Length: 184
Image (cartoon, rainbow, N blue to C red):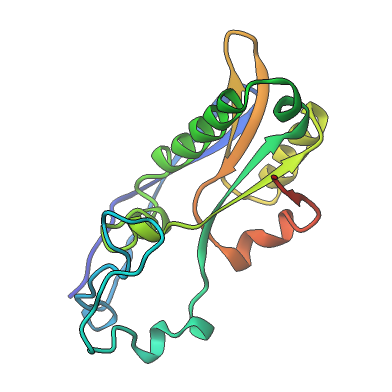
């Protein structure tokens, strides 16, 4: 069985504007690579595994050593964390994260990341940079490396507050974030 995904919508932040491009492509997925697995997390719990029967839910191709984890990176500004109410800074990160996912909703990796089977096990890494200059520099570095992300610009103040990548396999994007600290 083959599936065709007609359009991939990409965006790259350029200042406070988004430049969109549409790229048509086809993806063929073989039915043998899918199975009817139940979510391993209970829908009512974000941290507790759901009770399962004795059936082994993993296959050799799903073993941890064979899977490249899909992750979304969110980067906040430390200077804002120290001066703004915590809720306001968290909201900025949420805006950037949702925006990055929404503008890439047709991307196969994003579709998989947000699939009903995986929605309860999304992975995000929240990091921090010192201030405005560092968040702008990181955005430029990601753009030049072809890493799709959203630099969130708070309006009407026109302040770059944070950024979030679209979901990516960790092996593709982790090198861009190695020097950053976890946000605590």
